[in-house]
Length: 440
Image (cartoon, rainbow, N blue to C red; front, side, top):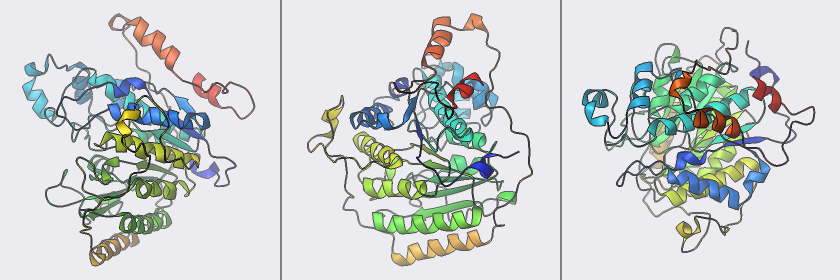
């Protein structure tokens, strides 16, 4: 049966945040001319440390998701191909490379599969901690790769960690709300849940002018049982903080009233910031973070991920500010000394202002979009029910062929690094549920 919706209290004495990070995720390299730079994740983490935010939350190294876990959404043949393809062998598999949409946008690089395992594992672990009420907010900045499809890569995304995290949350919650503020449409997540009312997807994105991925019209609302449970808010170039936030708050408030979700997943793609290499919006970091603050105060279990973001110093700034927002901490504008301080020259300031692009979103256009979205929401069955069911187990541990494993890497390191705990976090006290989670 669903238990999370019934016992989760909005009267929380102190919010508890779990943060997932593995340094290996920032060491992969997509290629010299590729805009995706996972190094931005190292920069973000070091900025979080420099502001001493790690002292206010629990830090965990995620498990590397098993292939069978990835196959909860993705086709097993696609997962298996990702597991065995390497830069040295890709030329032998041209048909499969085409079939799975691997190549220029989604290149094969060293440690590709491990990269996918880490970022997907972080989002799955975050969902599980929320399900077990071990935290109120869970953060995985390495996640948020919202374009990946069941059987193929897309838009720099290989495994759709968001779908996997939502599937975990659905074990405990009748309804899950997905919100996406990346400049690109969250097409992979929308597509995965297009035919169900168990998940409502709400995407705010640039639409038109052949902008990738080309989907996300306001008229795309879902089908069959999912009709009107896909909400698209298509925007034009240059939208600023004021216009974006007014629309965001209006839509999300209406969604909450109509849908009454039990948990929320928020994808915080930072390519919607002004000055992004691939983006075309005009949001400041404060404007972007205001969305996080608004969703936080809805007082529901909240899973927060990264996403796009291609001006990496601004990505690090943004996600650090948003980590602070979840913790209720206002950060000083002067960036403290850290290993990546040179990237923040010349002013070494945390906040980036909005840019000077013309806002092509007229008041009449935004009013029209708002009206269409609200009409669509008015068409849905209020807070759809779902048949009660047994909660499946959290962990899918496959039989491992030890002959194929490096025991030093697979067993010792996984045991040693399963969790990184704060110095003051031990198995003590009646309220510490971590031991029971470890023993699961």
